[in-house]
Length: 193
Ligand SMILES: Cc1cc2nc3c(=O)[nH]c(=O)nc-3n(C[C@H](O)[C@H](O)[C@H](O)COP(=O)(O)O)c2cc1C
Image (cartoon, rainbow, N blue to C red; front, top):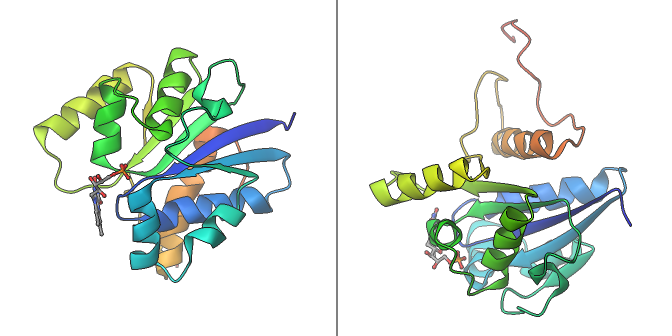
């Protein structure tokens, strides 16, 4: 088995580029990582709307790909071992379904499996403003041990390009996964030029 097996799901929120960059980075780092991708139907549309990529390119970055409709996929069972699930970007619909145990597709089911097996679950929500329901769902998930890592880039590393902002969030996800990276300059107490 690979050192780490990570499930990466992209759902239909704005910011699919975060999920794409995470898959690119994980396919590049030489740390024996196996990636399993699940891309929702709306996420496929948003890949076409927001990027110059085709969903087939995004799928080619992962070691294995499952359809969100495939509830018989290995990752639907707690008996199949994986280390972590990252949902990036995570729509409020998917976040709400996870918070309420409504596992009608493979993305919600794999999140549910991660929670019941006490494995790492990282959600990267992207929505603004947030409703009371969104905030309550996030609080419920956070109390259940889920990492809520909103797509809120920082600016202390003096980003010059959009990719610097994207890489900041991807770096924060990799930090949570315990995977080394050099995607952004860490705050050192010194103001950058
Ligand atoms: C262009 C576009 C952008 C969207 N952006 C967001 C968003 O940023 N956050 C969000 O929660 N939903 C967003 N939505 C709505 C979700 O796609 C919708 O709730 C969908 O049912 C999510 O399904 P999924 O989670 O199964 O992918 C967006 C939809 C479209 C078409």
